[in-house]
Image (cartoon, rainbow, N blue to C red; front, side, top):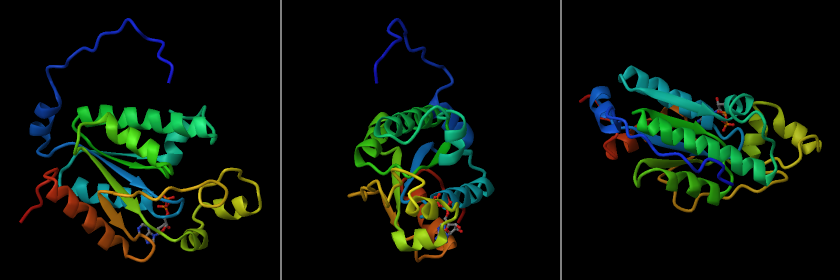
Length: 204
Ligand code: ADP
């Protein structure tokens, strides 16, 4: 990215992340869900958020389609635009981390380099990459948004899994089979990792 704002100085807040975390009663973190369209990223992210809400945690879901309607509404699906899309989302997730939230992002984010970029933006250990593994055939069968049908007809160029690659995470923090496991089971796996990482304390 070309930087245009050079004469800027970061202002340090006195109400900082650690004070917000104390107030919230949990740590902040970025849960980065990745996988094919229809793999279950949004469904899982929102279901995890629902559980966290009931546990009294402060959360926010950054969802692919929602972000593309606003913050990234000017971007398409070329490599350059996909890169810029992820850069903006990663920067927002970073701000949310500082604000004390548990942020859940649900973007295909097909390229390893872009996921690594998002990981590198935040302190080590605060980025939890969750790979939602689901066979293309199952995603296509689900076809939640009718996009696979359109992509097969050639109406959507550069569609991940069909005409654009998906690079499977080599070392995700969590690997979940959203294609075959039941949603409740997937939610519990995410919560276990959050507890293991010390983000939340589950009631005994
Ligand atoms: P994505 O956000 O990855 O594009 P969606 O969450 O929009 O995918 O759609 C996934 C679909 O798969 C939903 O209809 C959901 O009900 C279904 N589904 C079945 N099992 C699971 C699971 N274990 N986790 C998440 N979604 C699941």
